[in-house]
Image 1: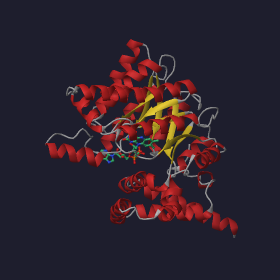
Image 2: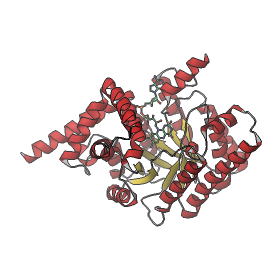
Image 3: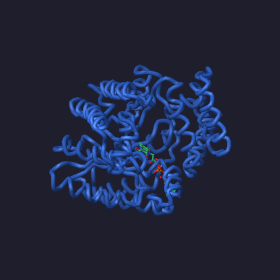
Image 4: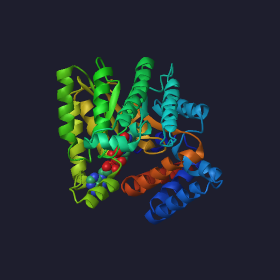
Length: 389
Ligand SMILES: Cc1cc2nc3c(=O)[nH]c(=O)nc-3n(C[C@H](O)[C@H](O)[C@H](O)COP(=O)(O)OP(=O)(O)OC[C@H]3O[C@@H](n4cnc5c(N)ncnc54)[C@H](O)[C@@H]3O)c2cc1C
């Protein structure tokens, strides 16, 4: 399995798209520029200045599929023609009020409804804290008792989450629950486990997310598999390394506590590899949905599959990358027959800007990936130039 076939990787990109992507990733490789850019953008957003057009033709078109249902489904269809499946996310971060949370639930349900009779959309996703206030997740995670009104509010959150999962089950779509910061994750884990017990009796419908940069996640994973075996449900796991490293380390430092995060990238990689191996040895009980842009991690799975003569379409093995990133992995994997699902965000430009800022910051902090994107785009641009001559 090779990922450097750039002709395949960038089939959907025109020369102009590729040039634009090149300059964007070049910008991301400059930490100072990204940090100034993020600051200025947040300021512009606060001042409500009319800058949507600039964002639309730059960051937005690289990392988001469209403004609305029609545009995003067009992107889904294009990916499908290259055997890449998708899961859509209305990437607007709602106001954290009761009304905002209801809107978030309705957005999740509406996005889910696009999956009806659309086989290109086998998964859906939500972030638990878009459906309830963070302070309640924090309190629950710390084991602090709720007041009477908080208890009622917590029940409402669970009802919203359950409504999304029930709808997914009815439509025949699998539901991913994002992982968040470690100080709110115990509450999310508790909800995810009870949903798995309820909906995963025959097959994994609900997928929790495990961040393997956390030192404790391997033990957590083993306990989860043990519970599933005892109580008779299947495990669904989106396996990721984890996105909040700076925030996690800073919080632990401020509290004078040891960080929950592995001490080095190598230790995170080791943890991630152990998790892959464990999950692959238990495919009868659980399903692996790997959210990663790391070529070595993906090769670890594909090589194991080929050594063990496992079908590339095994229903319990999925690979996933973000829209606008790691296309060399998604397109080459899919064209070799593996099951690939792109995370495809959409929504009005101004409202998805916080998501776009996070992509820019993430691409800056993940040092290995931006140079790789740049070198592959450069290779493809060169290939196209020489082909024309
Ligand atoms: C489809 C998809 C869904 C995702 N969903 C979530 C989610 O729900 N929750 C979430 O938190 N993240 C999520 N992520 C982001 C993910 O956790 C990673 O941040 C991102 O994918 C980079 O990891 P990698 O495996 O692609 O690449 P790599 O480049 O191999 O790894 C980079 C990652 O390694 C870890 N790392 C880097 N330096 C160190 C260090 N010094 N010490 C310890 N660890 C280190 C960090 O986790 C960093 O993000 C998702 C990613 C994808 C592709």
